[in-house]
Amino acid sequence: MADFAVSEEKNRWLKEKMEQFGVAEKDLEERFVHASGRGGQHVNKSSSCVYIKHLPTGIEVKCMESRSQSLNRFLARRLLLEKLEGAGGGKTRKEMAAEKLKRQKSRRKRRGTVKYGTVAADGEEMEPESGEDAATGQDL
Image (tube, rainbow, N blue to C red; front, side, top):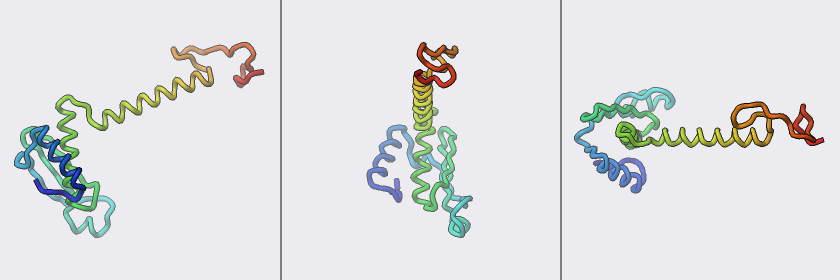
């Protein structure tokens, strides 16, 4: 496998992950196409967009995040490994981030209901405690 325009550590990580999932370079069909979007004349003249297809599973990935073809090759392989991990039943990075965001939102919602005391955790209206103004929730 060729080294890409990233650090040695990232190249090593990619090789280890590919071995872990049993993905060989010969199993990949790689094509380069013109990218679209920002980048101006450079994008219009060079084929920096990378298209990879994993032949045994049929999973396809297209990456045009960077103007560099070498960096896009690395990112496309990383994305392919994430898709393979998701197809194998494991949690992908996106799924873990979505779960984290969901936990944060629920925690903030609980804190808000406790702080302002307008809605109980079970969704019922709460009466202000004695000594509080009903309109503002402030102590009298």
